[in-house]
Length: 191
Image (cartoon, rainbow, N blue to C red; front, side):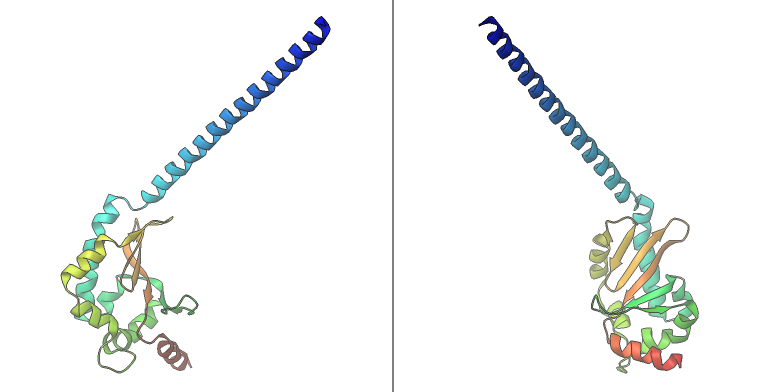
């Protein structure tokens, strides 16, 4: 009987040790989960820190200077606000981008940005810049920056990226006026 009680005691001790080990593993698991959550939040903070206060302060200045240069219509002065190669994207995700270098931008600026590809006298890009009130742009600026691995922003059809050495530059332009007509124009002019 004592031996049997001893077996029960040993079994009970093993069960307790097993439960303690499981609880210990659970605690270790919780510590690991907490550690990974901490690392995630630290890395998210680092990602959010990609747009530091300097970048955020420079965005309205950049936009206003770009806006004024675009309204003046000088291709050379407007080109300083773009990063090349510049991607012109269509309104749909499956539209293949048109890529411009600086030379192509300068050559076609008047036609695409000022006159408009559709022949209506003004491009939709220029109309938007001219006709929308300052309050519209202020609201867009307040909601322009979006999270990601880099400091990027989008205002209307202009997608911008922050580079510590160069400041804000427009990296992509969404050309919604008539993207298929724009692409066919560039195919013909390239021949």
